[in-house]
Image 1 (cartoon, helix red, strand yellow):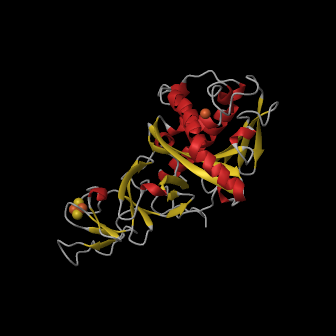
Image 2: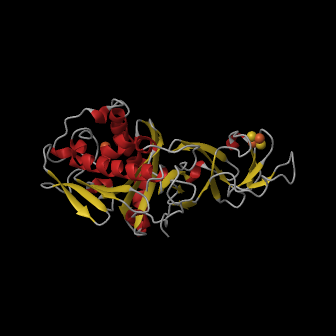
Image 3: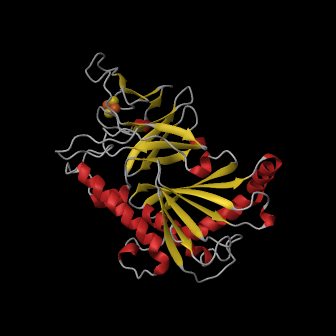
Length: 355
Ligand code: FES
Ligand SMILES: [Fe+2]
C-alpha cells in the first residue's frame, strides 16, 4: 500500500491540526506520511494513558485491556478537552469534562449526557495506525486525515534476527534537524568523542564522499574505515533512519562492531526524541555475554557518549544553520538538509491544494 492524498483544489488541514502548514512549519515540526517511533513500549503499561507531543501535535497513547496500544489526538471531539485527563475505561477513554466516550479507533461510542445524539458512532477523533516492534511503539503520521499508512517495514539491522539490540531513548532540547545533521557528520566522532571508550582512535583529518544508493546515501571517509565513526548511511524507507557502525576492541565483548540504528523524532520546533537501537551480531552464549556486558558496563559508557552530543546540540544557537561556513566534511549535512527542504515544499504544496 502506498500513501495517497486527497484530490487537489482547496487548501487542506494537516492531520491533527485545524489548519494547513507551510513548508517552513513542516520543516520545523516534522515531515508527514512517515512511520515514526513514538515512545518505548515500557512507558505505556496496560491501563495507562500517556500524553505525548510529536510533530507539534498533542496525542494520547493508551493501552487497552487486551494490551493493544492506541494513539489518538489528545482532544475531545465535543469541546476539545484533553482526553488524557479523562478516565481509562479498558477499550475507550471517557472525557473528564462531559463524559463523551471515544474508543481506540477515534469513534465516539457514547454521549452519556444526550444518548442517541448524532455524535455517537462518528469517527470524530484522529486515530493513528500503530505497530509495536523492537520494544517501541511506532505510528504512521499522515499528512492529511485522508492519507493511508504505508507498509510498516523495520530497518534492516532491527529486522535481522541474528542481531541482538537494546533501545536507548532520550528527550532533548533543540530542533530535530540539528540531531539529523549531527549523525550525518561522522567527523565529530574524532573530536567531540575523542575521550570516549570507543572513538579515541584514528585520524583527525579526513576526506569524505557521498555514495548514492537506491534508498538514500552513504556519507563516508575515503581514507579510513573500521577505526572510528567513519561512515553513516541515510535510509529512506518506511521510516527515515540512519545506520552506522562503531568498531569495538575485543575487551568490549563478543560480536565485533557495534551497530546503531538511529531516528530523531520532532516533539515540536525546539525539542526532539532520540531513539538509538544499539546492536551486535551475536548468537547463543555470546548473545548472553553481550547482553550481560551491556547492562553492567556498556550502557553507562554509551550514555556518556550521548551526553557529549547533548551538551553541544542543546546549546547550539537556535539559528545555527542560517549562518555557517561549511567545508567538505559537511556535504552529508548539506545533502540531508536539501532532501528535507524539498520534502517540506512538496508536502506544503499538497496541503495548499497545488499538487
Ligand atoms: S469536552 Fe469532552 S465531553 Fe465535553
Ligand atoms: Fe555523537
